[in-house]
Amino acid sequence: MKGRKLLMIPGPIEFEPDVLRAMGMATTSHVAPDFIEVFGRSLELMREVWKSPKGQPFIVAGTGTLAMDMAAANLIEQGDRVLVISTGYFGKRFKDILDRYGAKTTILEAPVGEVVSLEAIEKELKTKQYKAVTITHVDTSTGILVDPEPIATLAGKYNTLSILDGVCSVAGEEINQDEWGLDVVLTASQKAIGVPPGLALLMASQKAMEVWKKRKTPVSNYYADWNNWLPIMSAYEERRPSYFGTPAVNLIVALETSLKIICKEGMSERVKRHQILANAFRAGIASLHLEILPKTNAIAANTLTAVYCPEGLDGAALSAKMGDSNVIIAGGLLPEIKSAYFRIGHMGSVSSNDLIAVLGALERALLELGHQIVSGKGLQAFQNELLKSN
Ligand code: PMP
Image (cartoon, rainbow, N blue to C red):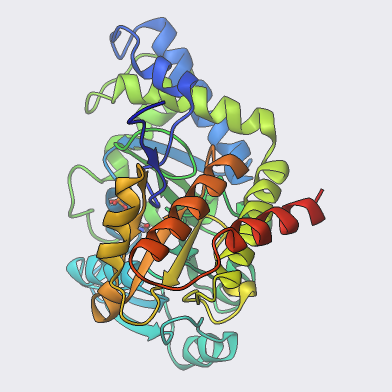
């Protein structure tokens, strides 16, 4: 279709037509019986996606940063020690948020393209009693994927809460919240969950809820306080009307639609689709002699890929050139190397057709910008890799 744009940034993403149609419905009252049912079902479906039958879900109007804020505001008190494991820009954001609530934070920062070793994490957990450890599952600035399971196990061993920023991973990467012992897994609507921006989504373990109940001081953030939201979540699950802050009615109707699509596909199938497409995409990128930020494929995210520009090319120029072909990608985000790389999102409803369009536009943009590649090579590598996985 002439002029149709393909949105391939790491969120917001391309949304399913059914989700967009659901959003466009006539807005109802937030206490209408139909809407109460939709909200209640969305909370129940979240438990399936998070694999957390015992978790306490929260759906609140806001962004992923609010979900991070909510975890920090409710679980951390002045002077609590928190260990922040950082693989990029969003790890540092968690530290900033925690510092605001008076936490004593220690940050373990991986060099660009690497992860923090389990040995380094355990060594630090041994030195002091930490109240919580935060992990960025996929840091959207670097495309680094961290394995949260062994870190959650370590956190359990040292009686520390584990908080996972899953903004760029929930419903795209493998997560088994209850089995892995993660205390908080949070995300936002606009990424692999597949709903336009505007919802903060969070699942807290029973242990996290106990820690919150035993606080010595009140939660200092009014909007984020679970005292205000827990009765609302309980009411919707019990199909009763309630009110604290007006829910984002249309977004929640869209959320229920998207969660149903996700559950129909099945989480293991969905994760596999993300892995197969990401793997084939990385093969396409490598065949063009482009380097990705993650040092190995084992720590490369399946929801986005961050790629270094060839020598002499700037990420913004490349993104603009691809934009001329109506393929929208993102530039760099890490301040120290911002113009040296670009990012492509491939999560949610993503298909092989989308990535073929990206590789085609990328090859053309590189050639037009004077970078010598063999046209069709990236596409060929992508197709071959995809065929292998069938
Ligand atoms: N964490 C990660 C890993 C993210 O990718 C983002 C958004 N790109 C955020 C947190 C913040 O989410 P939001 O922009 O919705 O506030």
